[in-house]
Amino acid sequence: MSEPQQAAPPPPLHGAALALMTAAVALGTFMEVLDTTIVNVSVPHIAGDLAASTTQGTWTISSYGLAAAIAVPLTGWAAKRVGQVKLFVISVLLFTLASVLCGFAHTLPELVAFRFMQGLVSGPMVPLSQTLLLANYPNAKKGLALALWSMTVVVAPICGPLLGGWITDNYSWPWIFYINVPVGLFAAAVSWRLLKHRETATAKEPIDVVGMVLLVVGVGALQVMLDTGNEHDWFNSGFIITLAMLAAVALTFLVAWELTDDHPIVDLSLFKSRNFLWGVVSLSLGMFCFFGSTVIFPLWLQTVKGYTATWAGVATAPVGVLAFFMSPLIGRNIHRINLRMLTSFAFMMFGITMFWYASFTLDTDLQHLMVARLVQGIGIACFFIPLNQIILSGIGPERMAAASGLSNFFRTLSGSFATAIVTYIWTKREIFHHARLTENINSASQATTSYLGQLDQLGIRGTAAYAQIDQTITQQAFQTATSEVFWMMGVIFIAMIAVVWLTRPPFGTSGGAGGH
Image: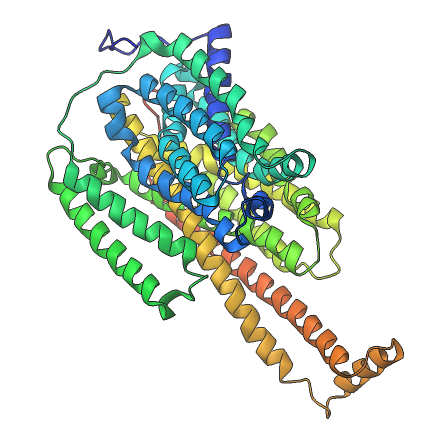
């Protein structure tokens, strides 16, 4: 691999070379993002094969998220030392190797270790895919580049559970990792072939050891806390309290250190840019609610409505359809669009669909669920593309990798917060409503005696009858809790409209398309 040969940026790619480069980079991104969710539905099978409990099996998910959360914000620093093209290709090849090792694992500790390795080397892949697309697209088509990147980042997590479930049911769980091999080899080979002479300049800056340690300790403690908080009943656990204190202290010192160090490992000065600051805030809060709904929706279907994992995936999947078709259209015309208006429209659509979800009942059929998810896809297409354009506006090419890495770090972290907080609220509200509903179950209640009479006619009496009542109460309590969670997220989405207007035009991205 040669050193960069020029300081001036090379001319954009065109024609077949541009299309091939886009396919390679997009597939690499798709593969990495897919692996954040493809394991989720396979955990019971993996745990069974490796003689572990399902709870222990979830560490195959947590270890990947933990490593990726540490690695993503280091993208800018690593790209300066190695070069963006070289770092992307190396990351893809190592990710492919780690995938093979995951498939070969014979014990759970081995699999968790290889998943951690997979997450660690995957860190630069998503930010650099965005950076490479923007750097090699013509200025007039940079909006399209952002659209294609956003499309892969959005669609991949939705495809993960569907593809993972199908592969696990029809083949075996190691194949959810082996399918990465041809994709990874193609992405690495094509990317290197087309971009090796378009490498960015490198600089052998001193390694910020203190910043590195603080980042690993702080982000690591925070991620483990979020992943295991519900399991340990949060702050009723000394373990969680210790992790919270460790994360708070390490991250506080990290911010102070990085703002004063001459060669910071994480470029926090990016937040001096008004658009980067409020764009990242909008992206993080928007992702919190979007990812939270993505977590709760299939949980609700399986826990409350009795859907299988496959049918829950079918009901959930339509959210990516309109996003898939609308994203390129928006990308091509982004220079004609008021980005703040488009993002506001996205938040409004998200809010409306959250309120729509909150109106669902136990009798809502699959068709209505799929239509609602389909409509939500409109918001997705109008959310990621303009917000990423706003975030990267005014950022020079030399800082693009750092900006992309930092914004993607907050995007990923907000997803972890969403999973932890939303499931906690959902569970606690179910307990509250269960207790309130149970207060009305007594011998003096006409509804209770009438329902017991109906059960008696069906041959269900005594303890079995009260168990049936408890099951019904639990179902109704979860239903009410689900509606409350969706209402909460709907309110946040509507409130987010005000936040995005704190950004200021122009919104050109490194000489690319601009919003108005």
